[in-house]
Image (cartoon, rainbow, N blue to C red; front, side):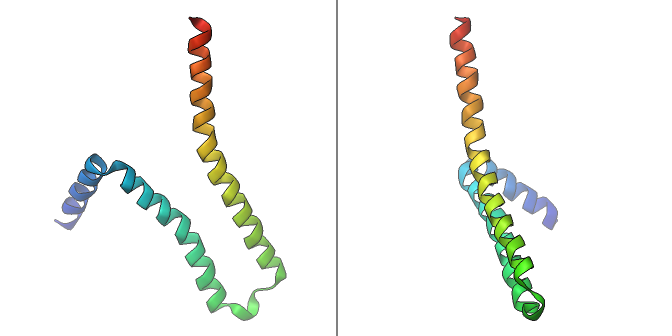
Length: 89
């Protein structure tokens, strides 16, 4: 019964509040790795050294690049489609 109700709730949220729902999911995706890193650091503080910290910094930089690319790429594809349509007319 719970699974059925949750699926109906998600369906209604996607229909009525699509943008807010996707923003919520995106927020969860951004915050989850940060939360995991802080919990790992808290639990294993003595075993974390510079090498592991460097890996976290590189991962954070790559995350930012991935977010940027995922935002820019659809715009570039849309511009390319518009250019193709205008060149065929």
